[in-house]
Length: 115
Length: 172
Image (cartoon, rainbow over all chains, first blue to last red; front, side, top):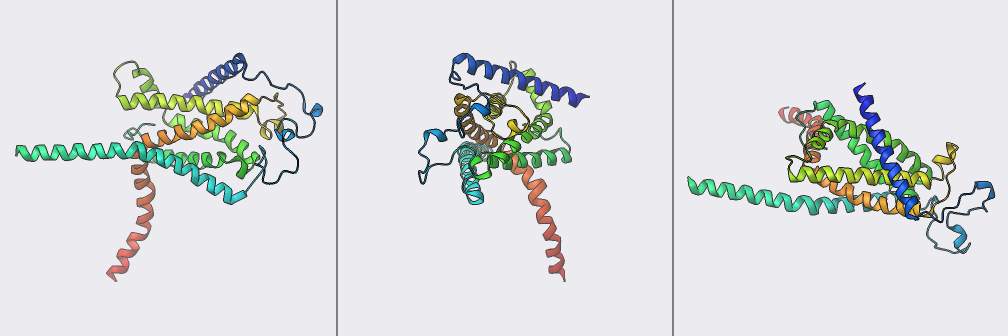
């Protein structure tokens, strides 16, 4: 029961944040160019950006939803993101650990001097 | 979310660790929709919602305690961590909402047709890039816990599988 209540709280907060986001996006007019039509009236591939590109252009970037590269690309992309996260971790954790070591060394030196 | 594991049983800590590893791997896969395919990208993200809810439930005590003490006496790092987690929650919500708005597989499969919105696509890309940075900072803030727990519950048990055998071989 307690867990169910907590899930409800999380869902409620999620719904409030969602409502705020949708309201802000609609009120700001960012989504003014939204096209409210149904799929059957749309030309084929309309809305995914492909209508703006020449049809037989080689080496074009992949469309949204178009699979490209497969497993090797997936692995490379995952490595790229791990490197980004790793860099952030290094930048934040390393100076902190150096400062901690220096502080510890100073404490040891002070206690040695006292004795 | 907290580095203090004194309130958790070893099995809870182990669950937290495996859950976090699962979230991390799933996040890396969903960040590459062109390589994984749109179907995996959308369905995996939607199923991640349940896992992220469990992640929040496991940190519930820390969330409520810090929320209560936020305006009172609280350490600088805990305060920063709390704000970062809120930012991560809001960005994650934006990521999911914009993803639902531009969905081409999951929502149509559920019979939901949403109007096309070009702003949502831009917001989806922006929030995804921002989520990567926030996740990096989130990981950095919990680095000590990650290293300690990984060593205790994964590395040491793995090494123990081979070490007794080695000792036995040496004694023979």
